[in-house]
Length: 286
Image (cartoon, rainbow, N blue to C red):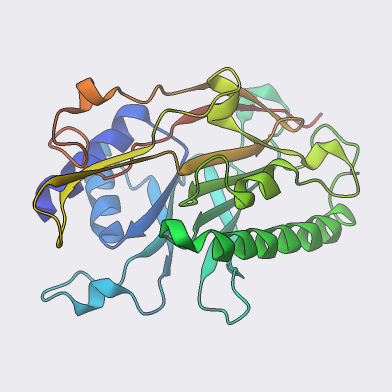
């Protein structure tokens, strides 16, 4: 088990190594410490975050806890400004939410043009294999929100046939294999058959129409079974609108050999899920 200090340092080092503009985290309970470490390491206060705590977080039951875990979005405040954040209900009883963020780019200077706004959704769907139906319903709630949101902004933003309409990104732990109904819901998402809003999985495209072999790989001792059990799944995704931005590439998931015999997390990989990292090119407004 990694110590709090070691895990915080390792996560910060990974973020600094790949230098993303925006980072989505789930089950984050040390977000303030991570951002503090990022700003200390960079020598500038150029990292900010927004946080949506989980309702009835199990972290609060742990002695000497760091507060509730939840959804967090870290962003480079020298590149983007957070205009708005809000929670999206994913259950009818409002027991689970996704985190929505609206970013606008800072001045791009010499280009004499401007980048489009960015809409981002960070989420964490219900866990456990037998909860597929709950995840399906959560996906339906998400699509319901997207349809309503896009209709609303289309009347005040660029025309729906514009190539600079703000792109939407959906990132997170879906707890769902590629064959699950909730993934099919996102794959088939579009508004009024307008393909501008069709969602595409970044790793599916980068992998030649194939998702990674796994995004989480854990080897644990079971409470009921003496032997070690292996838990290996592809359940994390980055979704984007491929008509509104261009995927430049995605970081390759390390092999099990590279990770090591004990699985995740490890001294090298501080999370029990692999990082998904993708580079996108946004279309500039004229």
